[in-house]
Length: 155
Image (cartoon, rainbow, N blue to C red; front, side, top):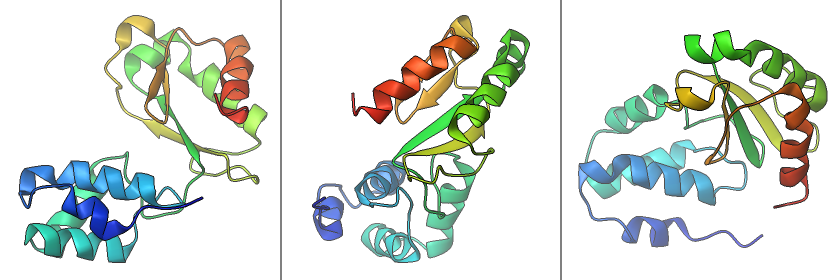
């Protein structure tokens, strides 16, 4: 896999602090381990001329960013009260069984990382999970195998 040059990614963004999250997203997506490195944070701080602590604060505040390597696909199961009442815990238990991992772990093949997240904002289709950037709602334990198969096949 040919990864983009980090300086090329930075050059696509104006040197404005309001671009911080977009830059972090682009850098994380470009990294083969689906995570941000200390070097990435330093590059962003220098590019935006902000303290490294400001970049680190943003990274640790938002759950979509990670300093730890993750799988190619990140599955985030919504843990909001609405999803919880809609059955998200049975969905989570089935995902753990199907993937052979617990929350926060990555499958042996490096394909999936399983995470919990607070409200994803699509309560009308609860329970819901997000795979990378795709929302998958109206989940049932039966639908999970179909969803996982699509990602395993690269669709």
